[in-house]
Length: 165
Image (cartoon, rainbow, N blue to C red; front, side, top):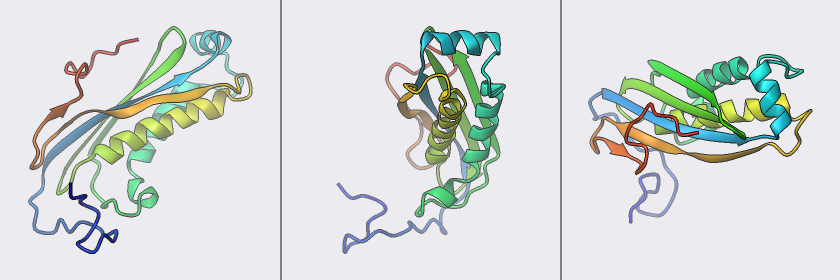
């Protein structure tokens, strides 16, 4: 298997996408934050001491999608033309689903993953004072479309906007 970020000598390099034509691309990802029952109650009631956890996480996720090249040294700078961060409360977790769109030369999978992960980190940051056991799990791509490889959907996530809590 040839990894795209490795050259013939096995060295890391940035893939040259200069000759590629921009196409519409979209990727979706998710992350879960497991929290204690009292935190779930506080989230539902809006009584977390640090404030509106879900609003902060949503804005942080959108901001993170636009900062991927600052975090991943081999990622390309692309135009993030759309970013959604949807957050739902399950029985024992916060479910974060992200979708990022672009019309560019390379995909937005890393932007969607970064948005989900950073939104999850913000949830942990805002509840850690009342729940030190909060944990981030299940961070992965659920769908991508556009580009040379076309559409891919993770089995079990074919209906992109159904949130299984």
